[in-house]
Length: 231
Image (cartoon, rainbow, N blue to C red; front, side, top):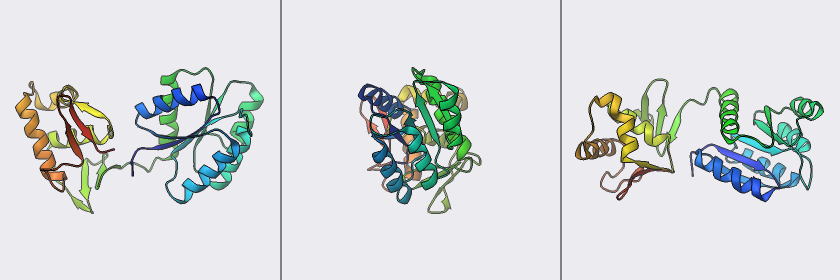
């Protein structure tokens, strides 16, 4: 199962669904989409019992149902689940009603992608301040303490190894090129990192975190391009 934050997108415009799904996925989110009030409420109910969403991105105007009613139902089922409204209207009534129902933010269409991503990240941080650890396969990483553990037992890493691990853990499911790795390690290494040296760093990290370093599962090689982290 993916460790990426899960977002439920409730939107009935196929073009917006496609564009937003691609944008959210490119930013590391796992996206699920529904287009009706009934489907949205059912999805939140099912997820609450199994794998909760990190956020709901909710269109106010739906062809089948109403976004305000969806928000009200969500807050009864999962009060802590954050909701951001997408609305073609920025009238005061819609905004005030949304906030009264428990919405955490709203953004008017047409929206700027980077602004939307920033506001999604801000809401998730605000409502989940205690979620500070990063899961990477069987590993648990605490960025506040630079602490890495597996099954409750600490894995001791050098500063370079830790920085390299964080690069992969925060880019799960994505290709990480060798140039990206050099950029991430340059400040610590102080000098240009040769190809062979980079390979040695990867091997040392795999030796410490993989079940079978000869058959890596957390950090796999993409020949000619770089590496891909579990995701």
